Image (cartoon, rainbow, N blue to C red; front, side, top):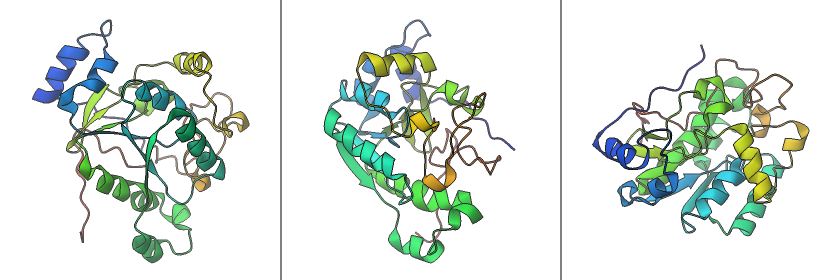
Length: 245
């Protein structure tokens, strides 16, 4: 069954941030929101995928020193790693590479076939666990997700709770045309796999090109229709529980 993104929830902090920076759709002050001290310690989480350059460039002009967390799962396309290094150099990013626990990988995925047997566990070991560990030093993290990317993200809020963290989705309301225009206006490099039809790019074993008429994320876990997210986004009522830690 397809899982739809839940409402963003609310609490006193979120209500105050919305009142000040997002009172209605005609008055959206994302730059002011990202500079608000109420966010505490912030980090951007980026996959360095097909549209990542836009978020990274946008954020770098608002907070040049903000840390950028990259989940190096060990299963990325080589093109993604090359593209990551290119953007880090061109945009002057403060890159922090986050890797999975090698002990867990050796125990649970020694033959690197877990993605085909249990993709949810593979994502948990290679993405969810490492990210939650890395986020322990932050109060807020910033995501590049957008409503137009898939039907399951159509209600994505700009501000939400992600477990105990605040999460900001600065481009939730952007359109595909906005993204294309931003790439062109700022002459940003494109991910080399995009020209081959890869419009949402994750780990190599679980990503295929998108065909005509499909949404942008149709190429992710295409053989597992019930899986639409990698699991790093906990949601406003999310709980991160890991036994044995």
